[in-house]
Amino acid sequence: MRLTKLSPPDQAMRRFRTLQFALLVAFVAVMLATNAVLPRTQLPWQRWLFAAGPTSLLLLWAWEFFRAIRAQDEMMQAIQLRAVAVAAGLVLLGASLWGIPERLLGAPQLPAFLLLPLFALVYGAIWALTGERR
Image (cartoon, rainbow, N blue to C red; front, side, top):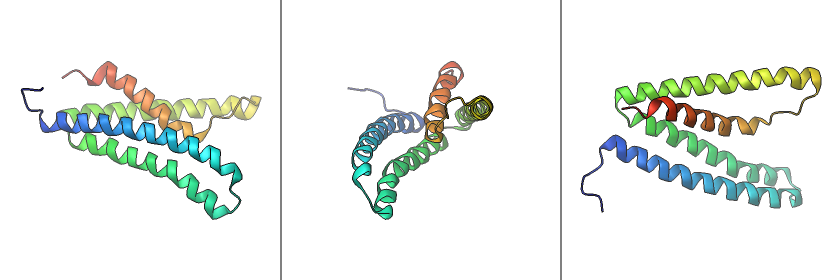
């Protein structure tokens, strides 16, 4: 049992981590279910409806991600937004650089739906290296 009360920023971060894990599990489950059902679905509107499931979970994840940043104090917001900027820049640079051999040499395509998970991994690495220093 915790004897001290968490500060509002720490409460927000704990809530974000819990919700992020839940959204990750839900996303995997919805993607697996969608991949199982989609091949048997014929009507275009039904296919779009099934595709909306994982999409809505990613939107909810993004909403919670920025909501957690807004709950931090100004210094932590600046550190986190710097990590966001660096991660987004690295992912965009990597995707753009990969596009050259993809187009000219026939290298495998980088699926666009992997950009957000790549961003999350790069952001997590940058945050671990620079952001946790308080």
